[in-house]
Length: 247
Image (cartoon, one colour):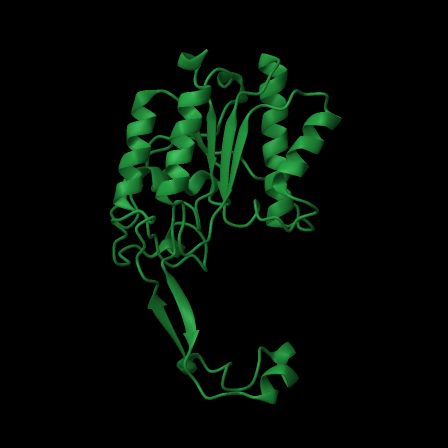
């Protein structure tokens, strides 16, 4: 069913049995492919000491007043992908309540379609969007599958994504005896704030499971910037270096 003019393209759930030869590129959506090129700026009166005193209530009364904030678009940068449209889609009808807009670069969408068509790498979404990635596929014209990210009530999004990634990698290893080179871009889970760097976490898990560590490239993105051109060039270099044709 089309939503907001987007005809869905269902990539389905990523099947670990089909991966093993080509590099795997794993992408979060919000803050990575779905860039949010705006920020909130406080324009109200100086709160002084009241800001600290009323911290548990969200700051002083002025900072709690939505009229004292404005949403502004961040300046463009030569390293940012172009073609970010003005907001046209209300994403809460596709994803979840707080996701209000899809800001997907047409330039980046074209790059993803080109890489998909080349067959040099396997591309997978790992996002809380899960089955709703079919609408992002429809918007971009891609056919990428997604990893299921089951989440317990007591589990953070970070923990849920670690669990999903390791479950997927374990299944790939059991099917192929190795894990192919992979990249992963996320705006939260790859931040170096979760019991050590993500590289350390992955290395420790691989060692604990007696699996040789594959080449990997992990990106942390800022939500306002998303995946940058320099990041994308590194990913393309990674694919060229570790793809089957380089063997």
